[in-house]
Amino acid sequence: MAIDMHTLVDRARGLVSRRIMADEEIYRLELERIFNRCWLFLAHESQLAKPGQFVTTWMGDEPVIVTRDSHGQVHAMINSCRHRGNSVCRAEAGRTSSFMCTYHGWTYGLDGQLVGVPGYEERYHGDLDRRQWGLIPVSQVASYKGLIFGTFDPQAPPLEEYLGDARWALDYILDQRSGGTEVVGGVFKWLINSNWKLSADNVMGDNYHGAITHRSATTVGHQTLSRIERRNNGRGDDLPAGPGVRPGFSAPLGWGHGFMCDLQPPGDHSFMEHPEPLRSYYRETLPELERRLGPMRARVKKINLTLFPHASFTTSSNMLHVWHPRGPTQTEVWLYVIVDKDAPDEVKQLLRQSAQRHFSPSGMFEQDDMDNWELSTQAAGRTISRNYPLHYGMGLGHEGWEDDGVVSRQINAINDESNQRAFYYGWDDFISSGNWDALRRKRAAWESGQPVAEGAALGG
Figure 1 (tube, helix red, strand yellow):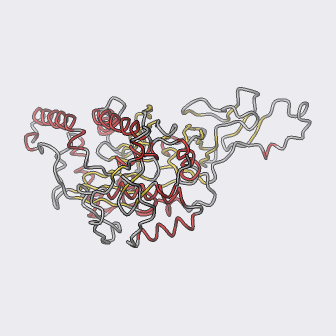
Figure 2 (tube, rainbow, N blue to C red):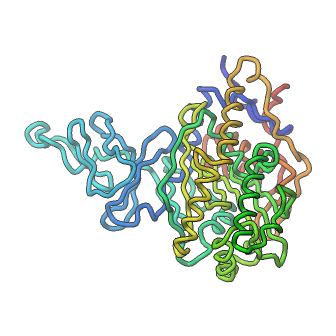
């Protein structure tokens, strides 16, 4: 049965069709209109620090090689030989001067140009124009403060325009110190049987689930940290007993981006939630952070950010999750740990261990989340259940619009689902919009605070 795409997101009531979490037709449309158009995270510049270094990654369902050539320029191209389509690179990362297809030996340079063809003279008689048969390039590649992004769409707006106000949170993650950031510890990779959107919308600011889903993990984590602090003659007994309402705001943005920000109380820079030596590091570097980013961001305790469609940051352990879709009901998760390059080695190691303990495949919090996402995905594909929408209406109609020069919209980070609604409104905009002019108009309407109630009722 054909699906009416205009009925999938009901903005008036904050409802989202379960079908978008399990339907193959919708997934194929996502690849075409979202993953083939949006700016996608490719790599961190520290992974390509030297000429000849490369990493392989994905843009939707396309395998991609990202390289740094001998002149220092970064390139990205589809990992598929133009002769028969075979992969020309099978390593996840490394350093090389060229890529050779193991089928017939066509060879490509670091910029993707075809540089070698066995039998070029005697078999092709010089008729093959090698300039026309390089690897298929990613249309645009750009960096933002150490992060490399790419898009297949030559008409896509510049990267900074695409990121918009999400840069406020990105700068906090990437620009606290003059030395910038780097990836440490490699990349964790694993598969989960869930739709990619469920994880992306969760990380960008779902504070509702923590007290229930992560109750046991939070309790264990608090007790462990208290023991460490007592052992170090710290103030572990003063740590909060569990999750509670903290000052902060959420920032739902146009084009599906959004972030949640927890703030320290004014004047409180104790960083008591962190163990040593991380606590001392944050205290010592706070003046530099405030000089670079201002007093508001100097109060930040934690930021959760999702860059639409698939890159999610959590600063509690300096993590970046990338949700690579592998069909409507499977996601390949890639986890990076991004730290200040100038941080002491013991701080970098502690952050890497924290990410592994909490959000790796065996992490205490990640296991909780994966179980939820997988069961939700299963329900989305069932015969009866798929006809009943998901409820994302918490706080709908009670949002507060503000503009204090930080972001255009601030809502209490604990009490609503405005970020998740922004994510699915962005999803709906990309699915239903044929060009970037239409997308710009919808983003402008969002940022101006104009009410948007597109889409028919979903029933249920």
